[in-house]
Length: 208
Length: 208
DNA sequence: GTTTAAATTAAACAGTTGTTTAATTTTGTA
DNA sequence: TACAAAATTAAACAACTGTTTAATTTAAAC
Image 1 (cartoon, rainbow over the protein chains, first blue to last red):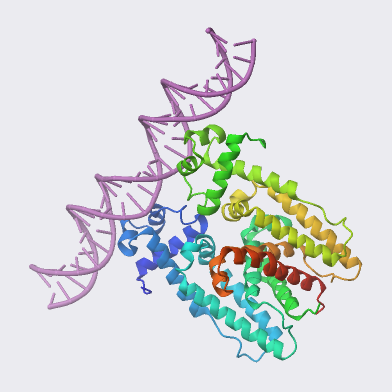
Image 2 (cartoon, rainbow over the protein chains, first blue to last red; image 1 turned 45 degrees about the vertical axis):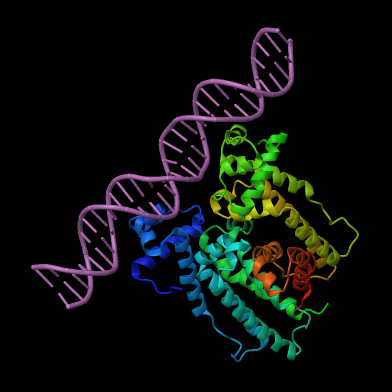
């Protein structure tokens, strides 16, 4: 699998990322990409082979990026609760900073057929889950966290809450009276992040 | 706004719903719909005016359906905690039974331009939020629930968790060793539902 | 400067798209 | 039966789709 791209290729990939994220894969034509990137239509086929392969190249390019961004924070000198806070902050920031590709992955690769192509993405997910597991086990050993949590269901709550909120931007802007896009962006980074942190911590600590 | 459709129109709408949900709006051609519904291509334009208007008609047809499905359970003789459980069960079942249209709404109406078209959907959301608010306020008055919860962020956690899980079906089937689709479906109705209920209850009850 | 490979181009390709047309069939009504 | 409205059809429309071709320009190597 090719993972190195030249400047021109990266330029195309970045334009494609924006357009795919905005209008979807099917909703974006090669001609639009070419016009936006100020290149000839044939260049996409020349460099990537096909539109489908362009998408695949984009996924490869971006997910190897995400892999690099990963950190293992279980080694830090924090108590489990602080670690959960930090991990969620990491989650939120990673998605925020990589909106485009996350949106594309979310939309274009939600069907089963395509999903097995995403080995790199699954590696990222597995690594994240491992980090989370380590933190929770530590918290359980210290008697802070309850022992009957289903750990694999926690990332869906973190990611799902974030996605659902940001994907219904217009609705929540109106509901929460957030005038500008900056207000919204700011709300996500503060209140929404805190909400997710509180939710997960509550789930881990609460005794019924 | 037209809300009554004849048999033929409903037949087309149902076929369109399935295809839009499976392949997206842009990924579905009128000719495919026509073939699947065993009608002439021109009939879609004849009945609905355009492909775009067909989608709008589908949304209208389905969301008025959703509106009917709504119930107000605040009046029931249950304690707030049980009401939360019930409300979440209602949420989960409603989405489960209306997979198609929810998927379409999720995918096709996540962009800001289109979102204000969805007055009916917003009414459903507002009604749901009101139900939730009533239950939480009752719980707060009885001293069971904490008073610093941001109520509008709870539906995103409920819906988001559900969506993120079901939209990454292949990944979670593998992760949780769910062999068949029935196993998955069953997991959603039991374990995932319980997880969401526990999460929200913990958030409402937990004292930091 | 010549040669060779890489990059870039405009044009053409064949297929699909949503939509409209005009003709025909079906249906309901008087 | 006769008439009018509604439903249905095949065909055509122009615009757009992803991709390929063959010619031309640029760049690098010798």
